[in-house]
Length: 458
View 1 (cartoon, rainbow, N blue to C red):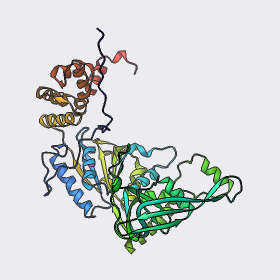
View 2 (cartoon, rainbow, N blue to C red):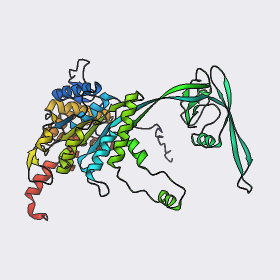
View 3 (tube, rainbow, N blue to C red):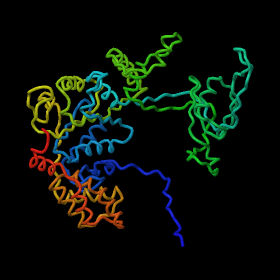
View 4 (tube, rainbow, N blue to C red):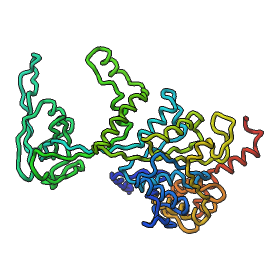
């Protein structure tokens, strides 16, 4: 008798991609600021976490702007994790802009321009505006057509009639045809809750009215309650933008009707530099908004990893940028000891010039001890949804001590595949040993190269 083939159907639910620092959820501190030994995905590094917690408090109290922090420690001791922990503690409303030192070496844009762009990206502006809006659930949406003015057989829309309903009442509006284009763009249909700005004619779809919540729809809809109050009202709208958004919006040339403008729009735009003059003008406008109480400045965090990759030109620029009135909190990270500043013969601690080091507060990260390594590997196994027994964790901790923590963590995924191939759900000691024999770590590879030097081309 022929065997019946039965296959399991994979769930269509979205799976979160697991990255190196997925397990970091914050700094793991008590309300008093004292670090908890194992919390928020962090293990150990108590002094570094407590120091980072004080930095978070200073940022929240807006006492840290223009200051800089250096995270220094050997590779694999959690410098990037600390920076991400700081960003998690600050929340999503505070801009966090990560970059790597080597990003500044672009063939199109100057090094200082790349740095300045990231500086501006890390400074947020919360703009509060009171706008005249029409808000409600769409009860009617009917475009009125007329004969085309340009001749021919086509018809053009002269105006659009829209009915809006709130808890207090309903209103019928006659709108300009340009607003109809915005309605189509937002995919507005009868039953949606929208608001239309009276001055600009901008349309925003808030969601589907919760009266339709019982409908079975293929797409996951966001259902919102019927708006309260009148259809026509004054509404305070809060917008979060960064200074880089303002720079880019003002630097882009507005399209004209002449042939050169049209050609320029069609061609792929090259990355253009934003001039200092434009930035100064934007700063003046921003300062005026802040003085008038329309906007509030939100200094964010600029995180520069592998800071030893920057050269003297970048460091001298950073010295000036940190003194600016509109400056974010800058966090540097490096794993270098005493080495030459890039592009010079001048040795300096961490590859950073002394004059810039003088401006920084330095947080040191320590090498993990064996028990901390085992705890970190256990957390990673949990995040990757792998079952690992105690014996395996001890073995991986030992491998981490001999080689590096990163190498030990990387052995988890191949070991789980070996376990599955052998018909087991959990990883055992034999799987780890098999995987260890297959993959070399950096130290073993270097030793092998040294032993077999004459067989390689050097």
